[in-house]
Length: 315
Image 1 (cartoon, rainbow, N blue to C red):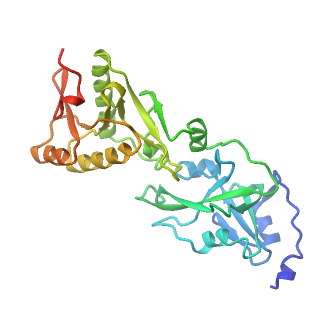
Image 2: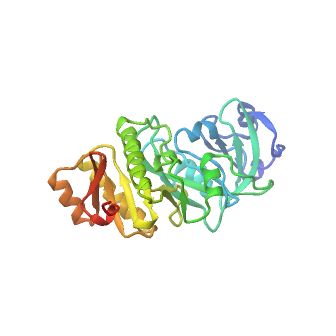
Image 3: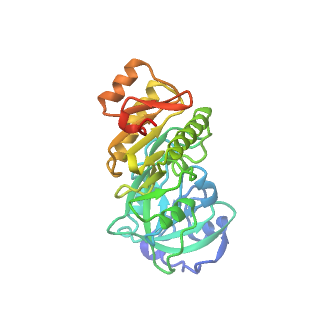
């Protein structure tokens, strides 16, 4: 169909209007399923978002504090790439297509308005799990700017969190239990090791509090990232940055070393320490020491460490 013929069907929907998705496609074309539907019948690219369902799987489609609408690309398994529907969004201007966003994916959908991809910062990548709770992979997030509507306050849990924590590094109370998985793989189960980790943290911070040390956490927003990072424990007066693990395995020690290296780029500290439920075997102690990480574990009613700076002075 020629471009002239494609423009013969006038666009009549306004932001807030509802329409059956089947009727929308009968009139204007586009795929009847999926989240992104380029039309061969009219010069439109249709985008559908279901925030309630998406958030359960690590997709936070909606308004963000930067006044743009963030929209996750398509592709359920493996790293997403800039092809098919994703390319249709990115190239909608050069293809002379209007980008139209709808809330809802089935049945009656609500038109949110016309948008354009941010020309200066069109997209970024983030981590999210594969469909059905598979492994983490790279997903594409588009930044969309409104054409015929005004930016709105964030409504997703991630958007609201970022709005309330605009600083790159900010102190959080220990009672806040957010972790990276809160905003990356929120449907993941809380495994027994994670429960043990929380109890271990509670015991350790109670031990420090009784000795007059103030414990908190830090939330970190690396430049260019939207998913925040969270430390397990930060002890201001000791300059102590702690990552806790609920079991003593090589995998956990390796992971803790990497997390401490990541957090340590942003949080001022003197000592990095791995908090474990028991003393690890010698080779894991050597591994931590080689990476300049102390190891802390409970011993009776107290705690012991491979670095005396990581604990209060003996009473």
